[in-house]
Image 1 (spheres, rainbow, N blue to C red):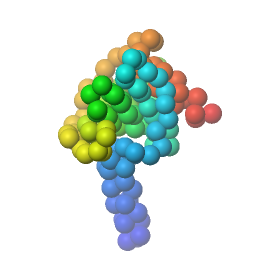
Image 2 (image 1 turned 120 degrees about the horizontal axis):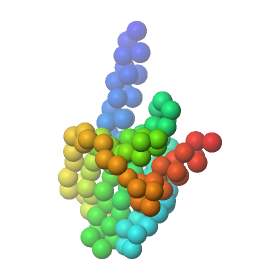
Image 3 (image 1 turned 135 degrees about the horizontal axis):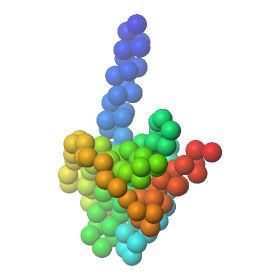
Image 4 (image 1 turned 45 degrees about the vertical axis):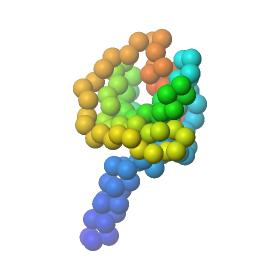
Length: 127
């Protein structure tokens, strides 16, 4: 029984700290718009019911020396994304400048947006 509780606590800590841990490893390039690159940690992807997936996403803004890391939930059928937690990192030093665990309300995305490319990429990895 204690091992199950310890396992649960360990997994919970990994999930809570995963944006921090994933900030420097496992990101795969998905799309770019000018000096902004969009990346996915496909190893962090968790596929929920039907067309839903949670994953860690990075947005690198070269002109600002910033990387924005988000744990996001996507609903492919509704074309929505929801930010579950976020970090802002100074890219060259990897210094964490800001961190939030506030869950934002779902937002819609268009077919032409990088979010759509990210969702398509994640579901292609599922196969």
